[in-house]
Length: 567
Image (tube, rainbow, N blue to C red):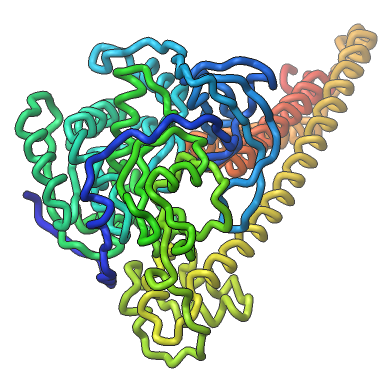
C-alpha cells in the first residue's frame, strides 16, 4: 500500500446504511410510462430527434447532445412517444423542464448496438461510443463522461482513482454495485485508464464496507491484465468521498484552488460510472438505467435496485413498501448534500443515487437559527480549511466579492459546517446563494465581454473591407499612372515609415491570434460559455490580422511606397 495522507476537518455522522444493504441488488419492475428530462447532466440540454406518436425501442437515441458539454438521451423502455413538453423534474426549486414522455408497450424491445472489444478497438471509436451512449457521472455531478475520458489529450494523467468511499449517510449504491459487479467495475476502470493513458488504478474505499472490500480483493487477485490496481482502505469520515479530499488522502496531492484533479495528474470515477462505461462498450448498452438506494423508515422493504431512467419515483417507493402515513420528508441524494422533493410523481434521473423516505423522527426539521456564538466549530469541521463564520457574514451582507476573496468557490457544500453548528445556522444555503449571485454577475460580465469582442470583430471586418477597397483603388490608379511613375519615380521617408508600422501591426496581430488559439486549446474542458468567449476572441484576433494584412497590401500597392522599396 502507498503512504496515506489526510485532509483537515471532517465529521462522523451516523452512517445509517445497514437497512438498505440487507438484501442483494435487484431489478426494479419495468415502468408502464417514463418521463425523461432533456437535462440530466451538466451543460446544454439534449435536443429531441423523435416526434410525438413515433414508436421507439429501448436504447434508441431520442435526443442528441447540443454543444460540447452535453449528453445524448435514450429511450429506457419501448413504446410510443406520447408527449414532448415541460414536466415537473427533481429540482430543489420544484421547477419544470422539457421532457420526453414514452408510454410503454411492455415488450422491452431493444435497439441493437454493436458490442466492441475495447483492447483491440481504436481510441476514437471508443470515445465515440461513450458519447453515443449518453454516459454521465453517476456519483451525482452528472458531468458527461466522454469529456473526462479525453482529459489525457491535454493533461498528463498517471492515476485513475476509483472513488468507492461513498461517505454520505444512507447511500449504498456503490457498495452494492461492488459486492455484485466488482470485476466489471475494475474492467471499466481499465478501459478508461487505457483512454486516459493512466499507468495506475487506485481504489479508495472506506473501512465500513467489508463485503465490497472482499469482492474487490477477489477481483483484483483474479485480474491478470495491466495496469496494476492498488487498493487503499481508509478510515470512515465524511466527506472522504469528495474528489479533492480523496485524492489528498490517497496520494498526498493537493488540487490547487480553481483547478481540476486532472491538473495534478488524476481522474476520479465512481464504481457505477465505470460499470456503465463497460456496459456501453462491451455490451452495447447505452445509459438507460442506474442503481438507486431506496431507504428510510417510511419504507418496509428498503434496498438497492437497478431502475430504468424516467421511472416515476412513486412506483419505486411503492415497490419498496412505502407507508404514506409515516412519510414526512422525501430526499433525493443523501441527508448532507441532497435536497428535499415536494412530490412523488417526479421521474428518476441519471444523477439520482438515493431516495430517502424519512419519517418525522428520522429527519426532523432543523430548529430555528440563532445568532452565531463564534465557537469556531464550523471552521474545525470544514474539509477545505475555510472560515465559514466569516463567509456567512459576507454572504448575509451580500458582500459577495469579499466572500470570493475568502475562497468561497472552494466550498464543496458538504454540509459539515451545518451539522456541527450549535446555532443551527443555514451556512450552506447562504453560501449557495452567494455563489449564485456571483455566477450571475460573472455571466453578465462575460456577456458584456463577448459583446465587446463582437463589436471589435465587426470594426475589424469593416476596416479590412475598407482597406481591400482602397487597395483595389490604388491598384487601378497605379495601372493608370504607371508610365509617368516609371519616368519620374517619387518617394519619401513617410511612405516607408507607414509600411514599416503596418508590418509591425501585422506581426502583433499574428501574435495575438496565436495566443488566442493556444488559450482555446488549453481550455478544452471548460464550460460552453467560456469556450464561446475564447472562440470569439480568436475570431476577433483573426479579423484584426486580416485587416492589418489588407492595409499592408494597400500600402505596398501605392506607387510612392513601391518606388521607395525598389528604387
